[in-house]
Length: 267
Image 1 (cartoon, rainbow, N blue to C red):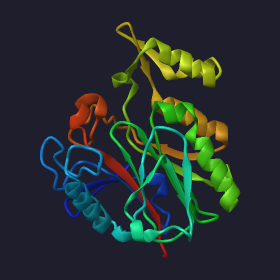
Image 2: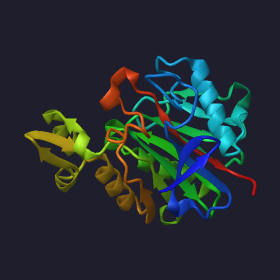
Image 3: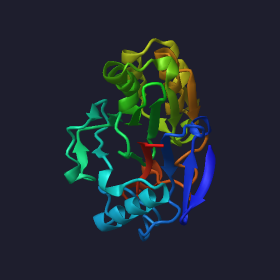
């Protein structure tokens, strides 16, 4: 990934999307912002114990740094499922940036509509179709991954815009690494319900007598199986890099949220 500093914020950009002239796509870090400790920095989480006013101010700072219209931001009240919503011309932007409920992925073909997904350990993903000028963002923890939210996003893009998986460019944010992601025994059984036996073997490892889940490996498996060829994963761990990222597993209720903001532009 490419690290850039803008207006006091430290932002991450995907190398495979750097040449896309009509696209803005950035992953925020906790650097900058107005939130006090323990959320110190650019906390975008409206559902935390940080004040909503701070989260709103931080979102405005992020939008200003990338020239995105704050009043047209579409965000989600994520529920760790695989529910997808399309933002089209009928969307009521008067309510923006109010959060859409029961949603973990957003899709649009509209210009100048920033889509926002939030995380504090989960994977945030941007899907860009340069041929049909379509865009999506998604949030996936272990539940969204087991439900294969990627398949829902790509299928919806195919239906609405004629997107072909082989033409999509995908970028996946930092997430918690397997090193820091212990899971209970019953998780393996859940994984076996959804996937063939070779998948649990690839996505699980044993460390100090405990099973650890490799979320990145499962997401990579899904992209390949869906026919996506151009993808980039950030090689950073949200749990390990305390200076840059919020982590629920590390900090519990004191964890804020970083975000992935993506937008099609008119240029």
